Image (spheres, helix red, strand yellow):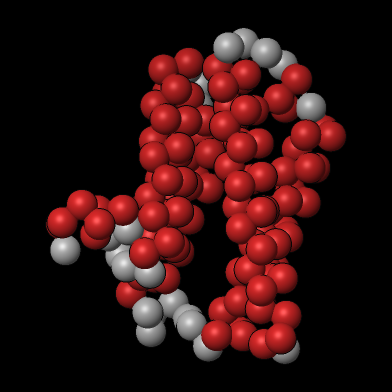
Length: 134
């Protein structure tokens, strides 16, 4: 199965980018008062991209024998993923006031970037590691 690693990694990276871009676009449009970001086709597209993303992530973990708890960077990334999902849910539909949706959306984008840095660095501090914090 390891022979498929390069392809699975590229699928994972592409789906991370697609998922983040779609969230950023839908969230910004929703904050601007547009109704199309909550349309069924875009929601289903988001679910599809996220399913591919999760499947590729699980395949990579299996191929490389890299698991949460055993690797601190992956544990932090998984915890941030849960936070990102909660914030995204608040930003897209659960928060009642515009200010709450805006703060949830903004923090979700920061968490997304933190997860990307952690994945890139394979270190719990992510981007901060390269800025001399570790």
